[in-house]
Image (cartoon, rainbow, N blue to C red; front, side, top):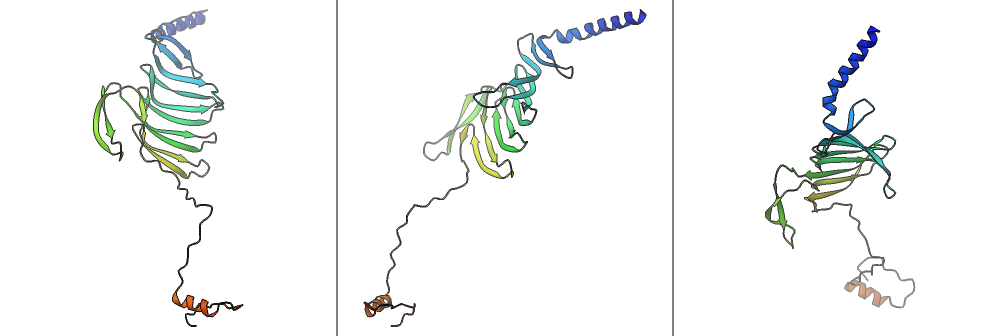
Amino acid sequence: MRNLIISFCFTISLIFLFSPAFSQYKEYKIGAKGDTVNAINNDGQKTGKWVIEVGEIRGEPGYVEEGMYKKGVKHGYWRKYSNVGDLIGLENYFMGGKTGLQQYYNYLGQLEREEFWKGYNPDSPYDTIPIYGTGSGEIVDYKLVKAEPYSVRHGDWRYFNPETGKLLRTEKWELNRLVNPEAPRVVTKPAYEKPKKVEKTAEMQQWELKNKGKKGAVRDGRTGI
């Protein structure tokens, strides 16, 4: 009886101990390891660790992603897994926008591509963007604009042969603008090329005149007659 009372008191103590922590959440789930996941705070914002299942969309296979939310947006490193648990993506977020290196793999764990993004800091109200000329594509000026919490493609995007690891092509981006796509050059030739006309020398013309009409006459390359 005494042990039962002690156990009951201990349980009640745990409830009071952890209830202040859980009171900050409007909704939450308990993960497989007993941790709190998919929590929504009293302000209606997603917070802490989240595990999100995405179903099949337009023929594309579904996946599972996990990472952290901060102030209602994705923040820090996120991992993407196939439905059978294979790692297929490593992404990095800053306050809701992709930033820096992102890596994507096939279902055998082989690297397929690397992306670079620039995430805008919502705490920094302005950003400087380049103004390009209409003809040459060179930067002619810069403009100060209000920054929004979003991200743009910025840096080198690399595509690989997943089986060999060989780099197939590189794309260079500047603030969502493709500046110099690099891809293997394909040299094409016309289906038919007209033979070039050979200019005859005086010796060649003299030989043809001397041997005109003769059967079996073969010029052996000598300049003499």
